[in-house]
Length: 270
Length: 270
Image 1 (cartoon, each protein chain N blue to C red):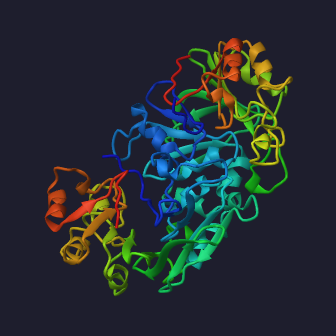
Image 2 (cartoon, rainbow over the protein chains, first blue to last red):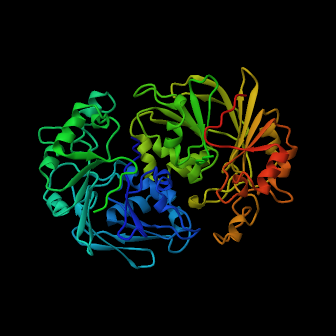
Image 3 (cartoon, rainbow over the protein chains, first blue to last red):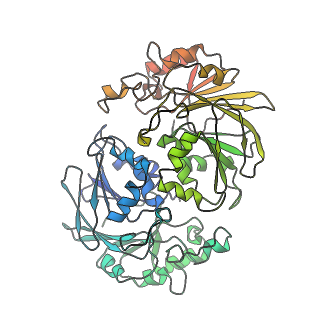
């Protein structure tokens, strides 16, 4: 199954859509999903983007969305500053007035997802800090705003989606993020802590990079197995992770725990 | 025919390859071309990249090449500085010693394309200034180094390829670039000067943006029709350009002039 880099599109009405993170492959991803195709030169179903952290694989796609449409970007102040304030490239998102509107996510405060014209989309998002680090290239001191999970609610139906695409380990915020959720997308970067070290690729372990390996004794798979959420879906899976092989023992362990692996074109209705 | 953004891979020996510009869609492009697939974790056929200017659609792909391989990037000092010196993102290309080596292109001086280990690839490149502008986001005064065409030679066979992917109009350098070439890739961004203005998308004309429209009375198609190069191929074609429609009058005009349109997967042997 093809798996481009992590990005999910959400919508309450099927008319306005928000991306959760904007991967470098965002153009290919938008092209593969007809409901996100532009309706005319200035009218696109894409209303905005919600960022979980400042990593390039989550943000770089913003620079491929510099068309004539008006977009709203939701992020914590730290994540916004890492992207907008140290990068001349980001000026391409300021070519015309209102091209990008940034709205601040504050930890624990629910925010209505609004289109560029200010109208509500029918979705609310609350960001909670989860274990992580500032992006390597930002070279600054860590902050609770560096890495967030998202609790996304549709007040009309009560549906809740939890989106936790990068997480270094357990924390009380995971309970707030996932309570009553019908589905959770969860960081599946690495299976084991020494996955890249044993391949000779790098010297830093999964935990050094603030990823919570799935298969360790105190790994995230044991957490997900116990989690009372109907759909538990791994996302942000590194190409070194053996769960990508359908016939691996690790993949069978996921199946036994009732945990899925996301793929391009996967759709959920909550 | 699918057409992702402009990028061409060249090789003298079929073993080491250089990209001419690195588009935001570079990962998808590398995946679609098996001869550029990695041979092992640290051994990839991709040796480096040659940049013609600092536009995002030419450079952004460098940030998707931040793996464990060592790469060489060829660019003028101005283009390198626009990319590396004002962008915290670029630090991800300095994660380990030797990850990226920059080699300066000096106008009119032939340069051997070398792999990261310093060995020659069998290709030489000479950059010549062509009409253009610094990238919008750089916000600096123009310089002759802002936008170059490439003359690529294989000394062993005498084969010459000219690569002129952005050009604002005629200049004497076009003769130096194309003399004796067996093929030329040429900027085909717009058909007419007011192409985007008439669509109501922007207020700047093709010439305002330093593009040489194909179809004007003094347009680039008349130049290409006269050019004595066996293969004349348009690249960097904007999605507003009517030549993309196989049944358009503009496409027929290209055919009458013996000019082709590049497409994904196109291969040339010179």
